[in-house]
Image 1 (tube, one colour):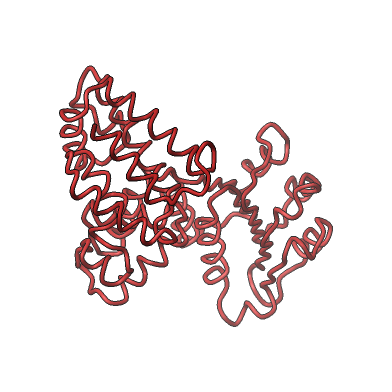
Image 2 (image 1 turned 90 degrees about the horizontal axis):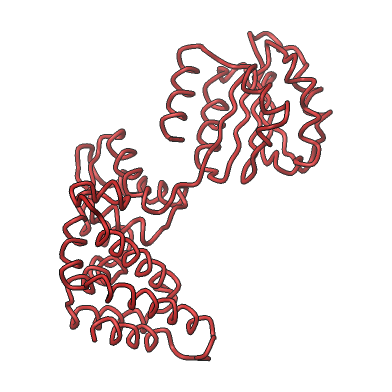
Length: 334
């Protein structure tokens, strides 16, 4: 997992195990920024940085410029730090870094921030970086992994969070860890260490309704609570910008797809692992499975697909999203 690998890299640096090259790549910028910022702030003292730390940007430099800076000797310090941000701008020529990587300057810490891309693992540059330094891939988390990430990050900072509150944050912010972390930091500023973050605190301080959200809609449907489900959909229709139909459809499709899988499980005791959900939420699937037999679930999935097409203008142009969701609920509850 990127979180554990990030902690390991930072711990090694703190213990003085500093590599000559850190190649930070991948779809999730949060960890790349985290490692780069830590190196920028901690490898050199404040006095050393003015002469021995340089930040370059991929759009402004060439590979030759990077190598030239990396080969410099530090001034009145043990080492220098060269950080290349937005290095993905150099993707066409990045393999030209190989000669330097094969023989890196031992007094230089070269940090390459290669966001949203990754090196070809079959090529020599990737293999040589792994041998000479640190090759780190920051993979994007799936949304169903984000609540657990929130829990672990907060635990490391001295806080806890209820499963529902973590789910609310995930549904509202998605898997953009930078955005999620910003909201967590806001909560940390107003809550003392040791606090538990609840749906009430999330609603009061982040502005996510604890009663009118996709998570509550999913629960209402799973429980066959028609009144609650239609009330939530009515609210969504009145606030379409804050509750885009594409998010609602995606969540319902995921829920019923997992419910179909739940019906097919030979051993429900392993349901949490098989479905990739927090064990706390398995009771929701147990209740929904009683309310929706397997054949009905299959039909509901087809209804959700139809609604998705209609929301994109296929066979139902300019229909308000609230009306589309009400129509879907009628089919689900029939």
